[in-house]
Length: 87
Image (cartoon, rainbow, N blue to C red; front, side, top):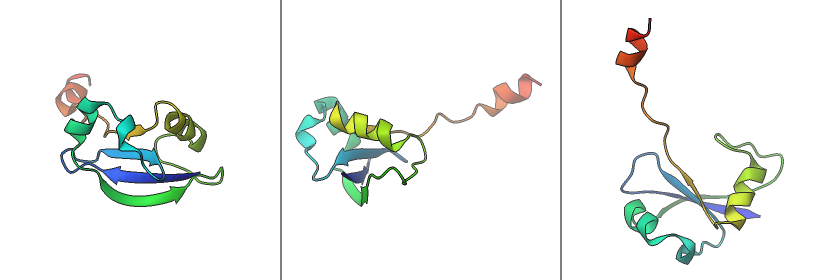
């Protein structure tokens, strides 16, 4: 299975994974508007030997089958004040 990865021009470090070729009609309208015009980053083959940073290949394949995409957003920023006060 091939997977196309797109970067959001509106949101930093936000990526959209879709089966290749991408069918953007499966995206909810609110997501499509907030994501902006997708900018193609790369196309990858999803094999069991491949490792991904935030999820497994099998989890990604599940998302690509239903709902048809995977949205990767950056983790929330670390609250340094809260961390310091907890010491």
